[in-house]
Image 1 (spheres, helix red, strand yellow):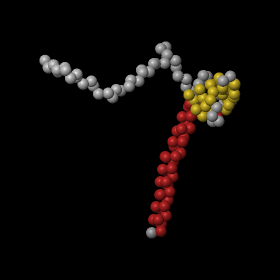
Image 2: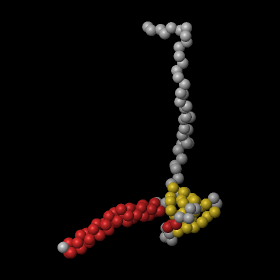
Image 3: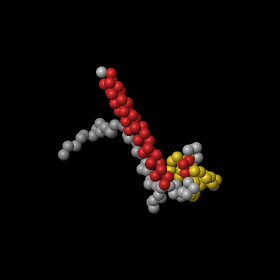
Image 4: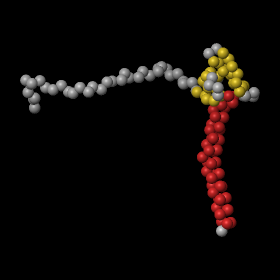
Length: 124
């Protein structure tokens, strides 16, 4: 009976490690792969945020040395590609410009006007 207890303990441990892999490690690897793909498609003019919170525009990328040059309001800084936390693609400008939002209409809560006292309703 002692051997059955050991086997069930081993099975429980294997199942726990399997669950830990699927709920923790696998999603993290997917996120890392997505981040790598984002860095590979990054190009000049993209808005980026570094891991230190610095916001800037990509000025140049040296993929051989894994460096990126950022324009931060006229100040040019060089970072490792790994220091880029987030890439925001610039929104393409449309020919019409930004669409004007319709003015919000106020809902009236006033009751409909009642007919005057001397008027008779007409049924035809």
